[in-house]
Image (cartoon, rainbow, N blue to C red; front, side, top):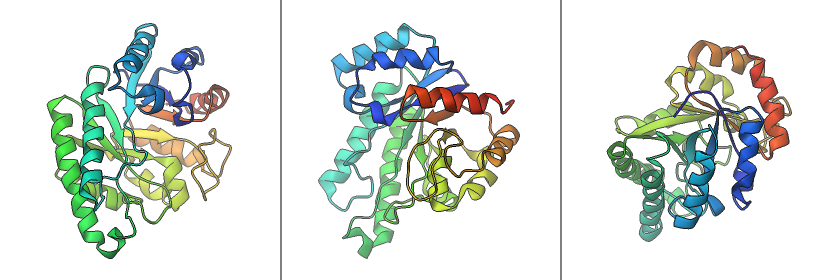
Amino acid sequence: MKNGIYFSSSSKVWDDPEWVFGIEEAGYDGWEISADGQYRLEDPEKRRKIIDIIESTGLGITVHAPYGDLNLASFNYPIWRESIRQTCLCIENAADITNRVTIHPGYLSPIAKLDPGRAWGLQKDALLEIGAVAEEHGLLACLENMISIKEFLCRDPLELFGMVEGITGIGMTFDIGHANTTGTVQEFLKYLGDADHLHLHDNHGSSDEHLALKRGTINWEKVSAAVRDSYRGIIVIEGRDLDEARESLAVIRGWTL
């Protein structure tokens, strides 16, 4: 896996993978695979198409594990176990193409709101299993900070730090777009040197719009200064299409990293 600037688009998980060639043509160094829909790595046919594309380009690869309908803090034991299973399966199938897999934390269901401490413990237990699988396969599973939906865990940096503390195989993905919806961009930037992976996209502070850089309200001058000073890993631009990918890349190329 090589450092540089990568592109990812969760909005294209049902599209034919041929669009991915445009990531390299746009000037990106890599592709973060949103491993859902047409990009489920455990599906042999879908995996073959993905590997063919990877081998036909010079793109580095990172992976975002599936998260739809999964909950690593679920009180419903079969759902909790299935959420862990699918996350670990993604990690196992990603190990030969990357050493970074981003994962989402769980959230509080209506019943879990009655006992948030138990939900925290279930999430910790899930991470212990996931971290062990990640370590066994030689990669880091990076827990990501979440958007301003109060039921989500890990919406601020200290909670994210507390969740991953002491668990081998587990790192952190800082998502600056998510942080903008919770009003915590500056707090996350203070700890940017501790991040293992970085997601960038823009919004207007109220919802997770995944806009091109400079289309929303994030202060990108402050972000770029923090990145230059503190961060040395892969930067992933998350966007909706290749036109916005080019737009964001033009912004970030001006940062003189």
